[in-house]
Image 1 (cartoon, rainbow, N blue to C red):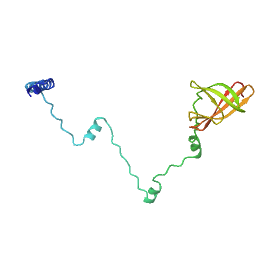
Image 2: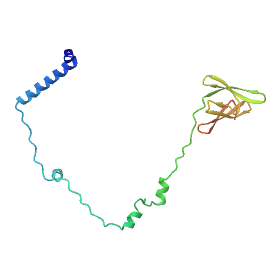
Image 3: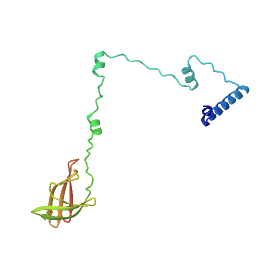
Image 4: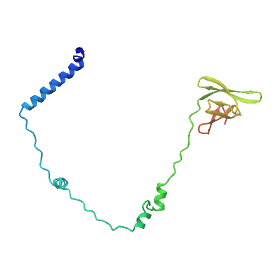
Length: 171
C-alpha cells in the first residue's frame, strides 16, 4: 500500500505544493506596498461625465394619448406614398433549374415500331423508350426524330422540370 503514496503523479503534485508554499512565503517576506482603495464619489456617472465634458441629455415628455388611440395604433405601419411603395416593392422571380443531364447520347434505334435511344448513364449503356425511368429521377417523356437528328425530352422528377437532349440536326 505504501507504493501508492509515492506514485509519479503524487510526487509531482507534492512538488507543486511545496513550490507554491515557498513562493507564497517569499512574497510575504518582501516589503510589498499594497494599493489602497480610492474614495468613491457619491455619483460616479456625474463625475465621469464631468471629466469627459459630456452634458446630460434632457428629455421632454409628451402628453399621453388616449387609451383607445394607443391601442388602435400599437402595431400600425406608417403610410407611405404609392411612389415609394412602387419603388421598393418588386418581385424577384426565382426559376427552379434542374441539374444538367448526366447522360451522353450514343444513338437511336427503332424496335417493333417504337423509337428508342441508347445513352451512356455514367459509364453504363442503357436503352430507353418513352415512359422509362432512370434511377427514379429522370423519366423519358418523348423521343422525336426530326431530319437527321433526335430530340429526347426528360422530366426531372424531383422538380417536375422538362429537359431536352438534342443531338444532330434535331431542331
